[in-house]
Length: 484
Image 1 (cartoon, rainbow, N blue to C red):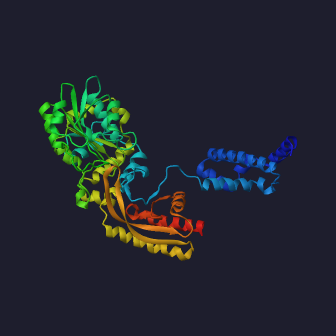
Image 2: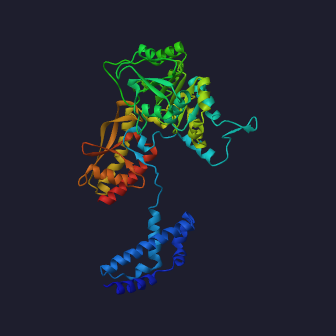
Image 3: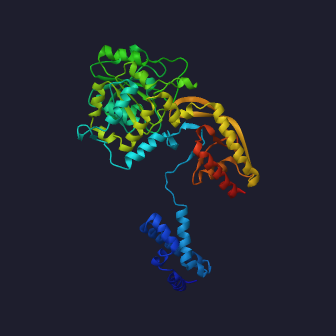
């Protein structure tokens, strides 16, 4: 078909398209407008019309004749409905079947119910974020959590910023920014904790001059003392968090470093990384230093995350001696790194749980998952197995379901290499490999993120929530219909 005939035929087809306003008056389209707004639906309709016109050009070049139904209002109403039925936000809820409790890529810690309710209440109305109700004048946003942190940690004061990297950066910038201001750190603690968070890089960016002491595997008290001079403004200790050193090793502990700081009148700071308020040994997990222990050792400034082992929202907590924390709070960077009302609302609710440690373990999902009894996990797995087994015959899916033993991990850069016994729902299919099953489950409206091991797609029951179970069943039914 030459160009003149093609253009003439195209114009003829284009004239058959119904007017936009007529399509927008369709009853089904009106329902979409009520839900998503006139402008949103109209914009999507214009995009659909544009794509359909491109489709006509391709069909004409291939000598394909289009039926009249192609140009009816109902055709475009159907295309709009189909689009919005599959329309969803990019950030969505997923089911964590990986067994990684504090999964950075899946949003780290899940907030307890009280925190979610408090965020909803505070964010959907005005609040006393920076208003002192007693005095009737401007207040400080940190006051809402400061009193709780002081009570839990037995520290003099505390402030909160948007994450632990910001907490470390701001503290270093406060005490060591400028010419000839040195911070002493053990070589064995010059860690990288995910992404671009490297202690040497953070120190350089903050303006501090890094002074390395000791060796990778051994640092002693006299290594610190040998490097202290009139330019030394801070002694920094960094918890290893996401790696372990074993064998011929030695490090100066918090109490010993405090003694050095007191001897030379130099403040001491410790970055705990994940940080925690409870002793995880009670669950049979490896020992992690608690924030309370570090404060009690006399450390002047301690920093840690709010969204890892603590089980709260993303935040960086700075606690310790008032004279030092107050200086950090006055740093102009504090405004750039400050947390918003929703984070404060969530953190305050989480901290309230820690006023009773048993309540915290019961109500904070991260702690509940880490402390789960292995028999409880197996029981939940068998309950799920009984439900999905019915799908094997009902949908003739060629599924094979079993419950197998495996291992979960803590995640979030804490307790590296430690594995917790768990149970998983193992899924195999006669025709589809585990990788294909994984891909299909990731594509669902409520994706299931599992793990692949020994050619099986596994869903770790440790990190599956109670309200995930019905959605897992529903997802299996959908996948069964796809694959049967």
